Length: 166
Image (cartoon, rainbow, N blue to C red; front, side, top):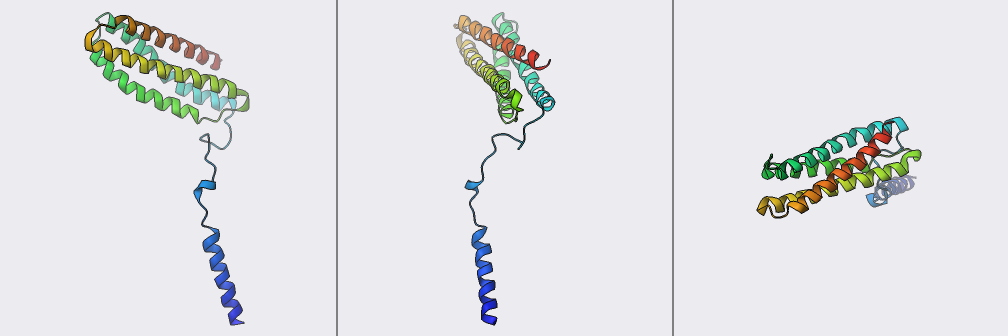
């Protein structure tokens, strides 16, 4: 009888020890920050909170870029500002990627993410052209084109934002 109890306890200990040793690789990683999609109202609020600062950054740099070209603002100051902004807007973009949209908003969410990424890319190109301009002022036309593209991407995102806000 005692042998059976010892055997039973030993088996239980072995099962507990080896049964709970699963790797975390089998646990699926969430694509979104929540398990369930947001309601339409929650989704609109979340996206609006993210898009607004991104729009402000893009519009501000397009305006400051024109001031740099017109010698009304120092290129070195704008370069410092745009470097900080790239990190900020990249974080905004990344945080939007994990918002779980309602089924009815999945295509629009994809479109918004694509346009947000285009704005981030336009700011990065603007920074590159601004660095070149700061060195020797020889690429004024290229910087002007980068500002125009940034302004264009800003307008496209703003139009999406206006449609979303309705």
